[in-house]
Amino acid sequence: MCGIAGILSENPNLITNEKLVKMTDSIVHRGPDGSGHWISENGQAGFGHRRLSIIDLSESGAQPMHYMDRYTLTFNGEIYNYLEIKEKLLKNGYQFRSHSDTEVLLALFDLKRENCLQDLDGMFSFALYDKESGEVFCARDRFGEKPFFYTQVDGAFYFGSEMKEFWAAGLPKTPDPEMIFNYLHFDLLDNHADLGQTFFKGVRKLPPGHFLIWKQGKIRIKKYWQINPLDQKQTISLEEAENRFRDLFFESVNRRLRSDVLVGSSLSGGIDSSLVVCVMDQLLKDHPESIQNTFSARFKNFHKDEGYFIQKVREKTRITSHEVYSEIDELDSVLDKICHHQEEPFGSASILVQYQVYELAKKKGVTVLLDGQGADEILAGYHPYFTTFFNEIKKQSGSKFEKEFSAYQELHKENQINAKIAKPGIKQAVASRFPGLMNKVGRKVINMKMKNSTLMAEDFFGEFRKKAHNDFSFDIGNLNSHLYFSTFEVGLPTLLRYADRNSMAHSREVRLPFLSHELVEFVFSLPSEYKIHNGWTKYLMRKAFEDILPEEIAWRKDKIGFEPPQKSWMDAQHTQEKIKSAREILSKEGILKKGAENLPIIAQAAHTKGDGSWNHLMVANLFKS
Image (cartoon, rainbow, N blue to C red; front, side):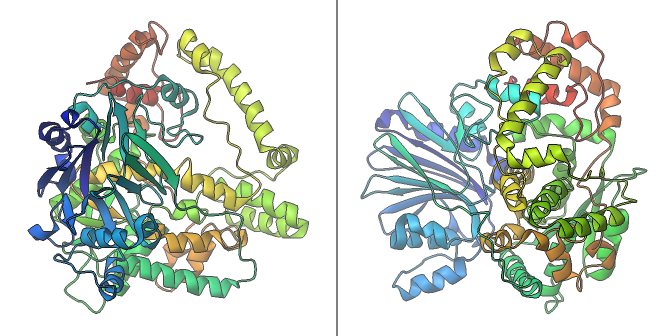
């Protein structure tokens, strides 16, 4: 796990070692164990690298790495199945001087060129220079776990793991007003119609599952992997699906345990992270010396504290549990640091808690953490998915719908965490049949309401109101399509950004077993009833692993993610002052109305909009140097 940097140009005068050093120095947190810089013989390609040593801790694993006197690679991430790939490459006559996955990638590229990406089970972003062709081949993993940003300025192509590398190189930093409008107006952190757009003008990110080729100043981008959410295997039985899911998940966790440094896990008390911990414990049971360290966030005197469920996992396994108790004053002290690392806005204060969990792992000397992220999006873990599910099965069978809806009502009648889903009516039927029309109408209604209630400046609102990013056209009557949207367009990509920046801020590596592409492809091939059934979300996972999970967690129905007491924090005087200062900045930029900083502040809890105070804090940070 590392940080990468690069400059490509037909004009060698634009590429200097000094610039590359400035870029990598700005991301030293991503790789404190070493750095490297290289410029090609023709002067048209320059690579930089910061190293966090995980596999092959020797100098032979250092980067940029050269191979066959032809290729040079700067690589960020892990190839979990590198041992299996290496075995095949050895049979093809390839030789290796290191034990790293980086060198395996170089050899695989020589053998298969761009098709090498199909063989990789991993998280990665990299740039590979081919001296013979003059091409630079760049790629990002299927889900976007690892970042790859790029920009083109004055005849040079710059790329890096974080955008702050560009500012360090002296490039202009200009917030994008279109993205700001959509965040303030709709709470959107991504543009699903253009997944490459960022909150800064001219700076783009390579979308997940894509590669980019640079040659002679021109770039070509192509998608190399995609799932068809409608391609379902209706013939597989539930028992067969359980067994296959179980095998794939065990394999995924086992591969993600490969490391030459300590491996632990995050533990929230929910089914996803608890399953990761329990499977890790199973895989390590023959190694009594491998006691697993887990890291959790706790909240004193807060009704959403997860201590009871964390204890149940502790009783079931051999873990050593470490916990951090988040306090209001601590959240305030780290906000500016997190904004620096995240670079773009984030949705709520829950991300501050995640930051503290990774900080605790660093204090305990655990470099790699496995985490349960991704399960909610691929297995329908969020409560709103029920609406889509009910719309889908109602079209298939009225009796099946009545049975499922009744089971849902009975199971969740005492659920105090999630709002109850209403029985689908005419509105839902129209929305299911004509999603584009309903989104268009809904957007107009929201625009009319917001025009009168928002603090947004009228000129700013008028300029960008027709550039809305919420024209979602996915088929909301189909659960798999809804899950695809959450996994690949709006939802999971943002959460992966949070995890990457928060973990790398403390030089920690996060691995996600639920995002094995083989497992995800399999889950998307299954009928909706295997994901939601009898009122249960993630039904397949619960059934497949009920024997190794604590019963209270396997059949838990009230889970909610990390959620700190955000409203209390925002009610504090020092936070109110921060919000006023943020509004003053945005008023001067013409985004909020003049005098907005003097208006009353309505503190908001996590996941609620309030008067937009949290959003104002986030956007103001974009304008800070």
